[in-house]
Image (cartoon, rainbow, N blue to C red):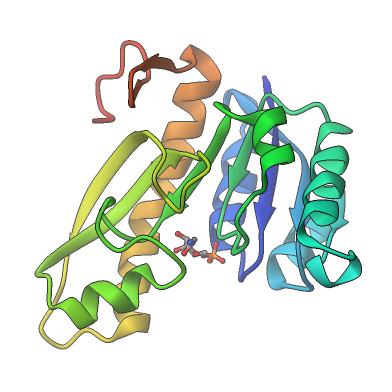
Length: 205
Ligand code: GAR
């Protein structure tokens, strides 16, 4: 199976979905380690599942570049085939991207290129869109600008607030992320200009 390092900062429900998927021996990926930039529920879940946790807070380093190098070194120590950002709320730096570029997968709670950044759900609600959703994409140097691997729509309800809408999006995100990681682990990614395609993909579009 493919080796994963999962990066997280939050409650870790996406991480838990990956842990549960990888508990099935038929799943084509295993989580080798979880990296966090702060104390968070995601770190607790990983530890409880017996997965090594590396904690690398930005504030422990003199500057962002030193943090970036340290994160890249720590993650490289686990030799991952893929890095998965599952609610990781820091932008990855140039050293990390040099090392793992093309095999870093992120999930974002909006239909990119709409509503990138840290508040994808809030921004979509404020704009008044009737449909938003989940995007799983490759990470590049921009903010949520990398090639898209899969997307799925989630309708906005008239009475939605940020928590209710985010929760419905996360239900979709967990499934999409688990499916995309499995597909990429099995078949890889073919790049075509700014587009990325998982060969033979039938369900994922
Ligand atoms: C998810 O909705 C993920 O898309 C989002 O954080 C949430 C993490 O949920 N990520 C971003 O907004 C990145 N810009 P979780 O902590 O329950 O896994």
